[in-house]
Amino acid sequence: MKTRLLLPLVALCGTLSVRAQTTPTVIPDPAPTAPAPDPLWRKSLKTGLGLNEALLSSNWRGGGVNTIGFNALANARANRKSGAHSFDNEADFLFAFSQTKGLGYRKGQDRLYLDTKYGWAMSTKWDMFVSLNLLSQFAPGYKYDKDANGDERARQVSDFFAPAFLTAAYGFEYRPAPYFHLRLAPFAPRLTVVNRADRFVDVLGDTPYGVNPGHSTRWEILAAQILAELDRNISPNVNLKARYLLFANYRNINPQEIDHRLDVGLTAKVGKYVNVALNGIALYDYDQDGAVQFSQGLTLGVAYSVQNFVDAKK
Image (cartoon, rainbow, N blue to C red):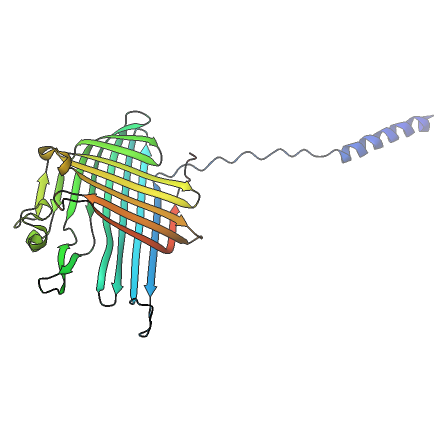
């Protein structure tokens, strides 16, 4: 009797044991990883080098001359934002030259630009700001023409810190998007520096870049400045960067004597480290010339860029 009762119990226990062994174990999903915090300083660096060259044999009948050209550009930024306070810094450099047989060295493009700005947010798109920027060049520049006898000559018209423009601006900044900002500064005193201005008198006139010979500086205290800057990727491999700068002296507030400068750069990546860059500068400065000046350069070269943050989705 006891044996008959134990057999069903043993069978039941065995069935439950088998079911327990075949039941799958549920593993909980891992907790989501928290996104990395934004760096205290958002830093970026873009650089590029380009080289072009033509080498012809002495009996080349197609015409032409031996030439070699080089250009370099660099743009570095370091920006920080904490609550309503922001601190933005930028360095933007460009230099290009060529060496041509029979003509020698010729400078093409030359830019030295430094800018630092502190801002205080009034709203999501408007800041009050104070800034300081420097615009100059690295190397001497020359005007090439012929003298009275028809001989070629080179006359110096610029140099390092000749001219250099140092501007302090106070006003309001509009930022509708991460890639664009507009600064409106109703008070923007500017210091023009021309080292040894007298050496440019024969070519540029009695007051080179507005500085009297015998002096090296010129102050323009009551003045206004407008600065607009665009830096946007218009496609995954194409970047457009443009900067427009307007300066107006309240003593000569007429359209003819307002300074304008536009710098534009279009860069297309061909490969990981190869790019094509088109750079242009348009300038109107009444103290330099009564007409618009411009320069343009096209380069195929190597490029490298790095940053410690991820661009916000637009």
